View 1 (cartoon, rainbow, N blue to C red):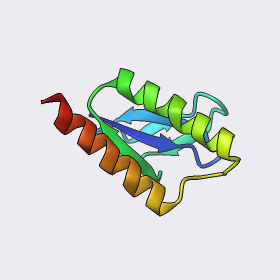
View 2 (cartoon, helix red, strand yellow; view 1 turned 135 degrees about the vertical axis):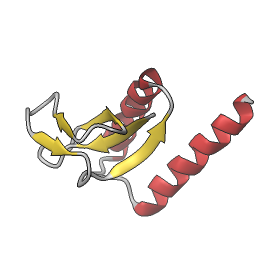
View 3 (spheres, helix red, strand yellow; view 1 turned 60 degrees about the vertical axis):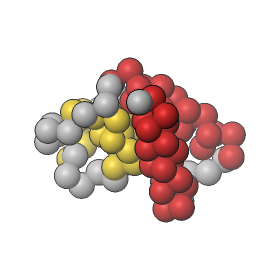
View 4 (cartoon, one colour; view 1 turned 90 degrees about the vertical axis):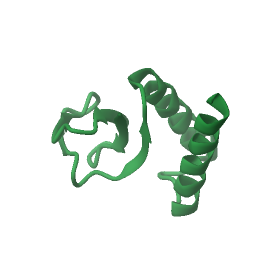
Length: 88
């Protein structure tokens, strides 16, 4: 399982293995404490995480927002859960 998190410095989305404690930001090089970073979603595969990160960044760029609202995060998690259920 992988967690989709966001760098506290440059606000870039990234992903980590859920057992990782630290992640070096691929954009700015900041050390991200996984325990302190906001978790947006937990996904099964890293390829899925990469795809979702691209979509999240596109959404924020197109809507000119800095971050997702709590309601948007809840909706994201709900949509992902529905997608998982539909795969079975």
